[in-house]
Image (tube, rainbow, N blue to C red; front, side, top):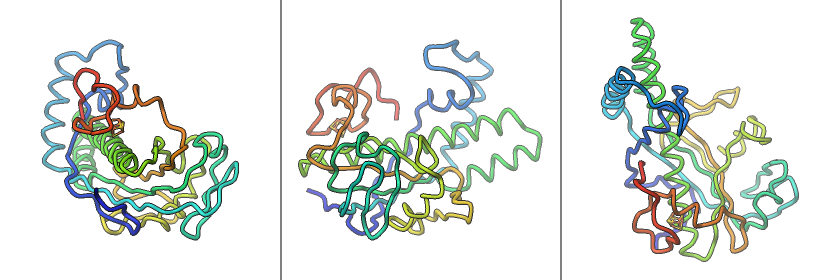
Length: 240
Ligand code: SF4
């Protein structure tokens, strides 16, 4: 059984995995909608190959016991996270796990150079590759935490992030107080925006009675192929 990261711990063996559908979603293609034509596919392949050379996925997480829980807030590690409706959303949680992940800054720098050189389609596609890759990475971290929690009898919720739904962006500073991004080279500026830009911060809740998606749908899209707790086979190919 692996140890819980009760101090910020950098995750080992992080794969660089990219869901093509996720990348194309950033290009405006909806799942089940019109498929991209051959020119877009060729551009996608070029950007993907370039992105793979440039990206370095890294993640750091920290498990923190929850000391107080109210309808709209969680206290953990000496900070108060104000998250409207969190108790109704997550149910009772005994721990939170704060995490930060990134694919590094080389891809954004190369995309900026391509914009400068007016190679706009490739610049845009490369930017989408970076966005898709960091989303896939955050999903991977969420799935690893699910597996880690289940080994201890905890259900683990889906991730949330400051700046989304009703959780204010400036709460990012509290998330970073729990789990600084320094170990993986991610910093916050005064406006609570992360650099490198292709980074995602996340928070999940964990506990025996935490509310989670139905595991049959969660496992069906999860890429932990050999998970001992899997309740349903992965649906089709697990892209990431
Ligand atoms: S296969 Fe299911 S139980 Fe295992 S980590 Fe994935 S979502 Fe969690």
